[in-house]
Amino acid sequence: MTSCLILVPQGAEYQAVQRGLQASKGSIIPIRAGAAAVTTPALISALEESPDMVLILGVCGGLRPDDRVGEVVVYTTCQDEAGQTYSLDQTLSAKFAPAWRRVKGITTARPLSQAQEKQSLAVRWGVEVVDMEGVPLLKALAGMPVVMVRVISDGGDRDLPDLSPAFDSQGNLCPGPLAIAMLRNPLAAAHLIQGSLKALKVLTRIAPEIVQQLTR
Image (tube, rainbow, N blue to C red; front, side):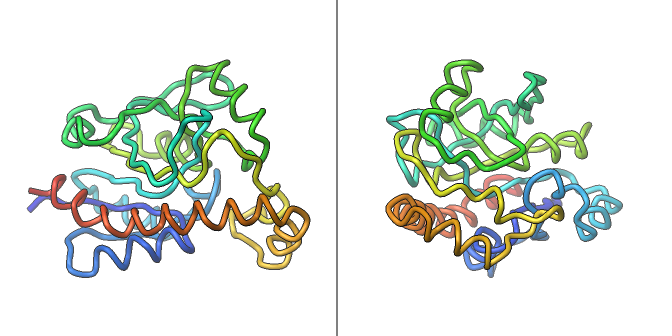
């Protein structure tokens, strides 16, 4: 039987995937946000078992004004802010084409909040979506078949609250600073919440389909 290690950012994303995969195969591990993802103890332990493949699931930010919240995207590559690019397993990724758009992603060290900043990043590097864990994970998983599927939770046309202060050095989301960031920009916070809820519903729905396709 094909073994699939599933990595999902901890918190709401992990809970959404867990709901969808209650009766499905695969080991699901909640990982820390950002670069701290690779220091998650459960991930380090799971890699000792040498899974046949790794699936990274979660949400991402769209970088272009016409991105649709709730759209499912499959990464072909993911790069860092210096331009170093890492490729995903094309054979695994092809299992979801043409149903879902294939994209080039970028990993940033902090959450992006300004629409102008998102769009500038897209123009500079030719990337379409952004996350905080992709590159660190791909570095740690070098040599293993990896596929990354995410759901767009916000487009490149709207500002979001600045959530940078809400994450601690271990990649944990801190409720106090998060609440302050949301209160400072209520309209942006409303957009963030609405987009996140929609993306999480899609994540729950597609998780079983993805695992079934990969392990059949």
